[in-house]
Image 1 (cartoon, helix red, strand yellow):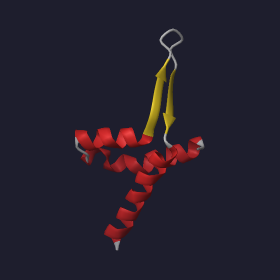
Image 2: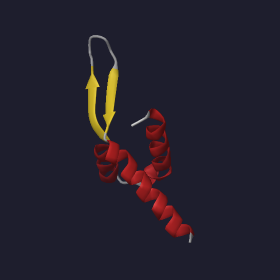
Image 3: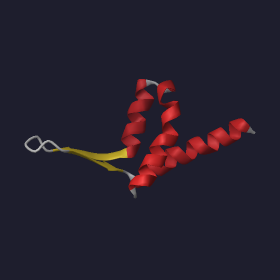
Image 4: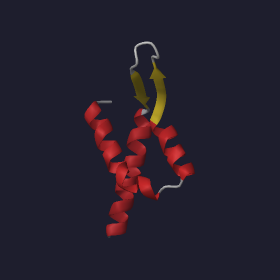
Length: 70
């Protein structure tokens, strides 16, 4: 997945984040993030996203907004 796709999918999800309960926020993160790696010696953090986890919720939100607008 390209960086632009990840950024677009996360941006589409952002407006609803504040309305989610902590439980739903946790679920949303687990759906999107496959792995987080941290190198304590060198300091970098690497996040690996799930391809389907990024696209699916963003697509669901888009469909929901379209339905609500109709």
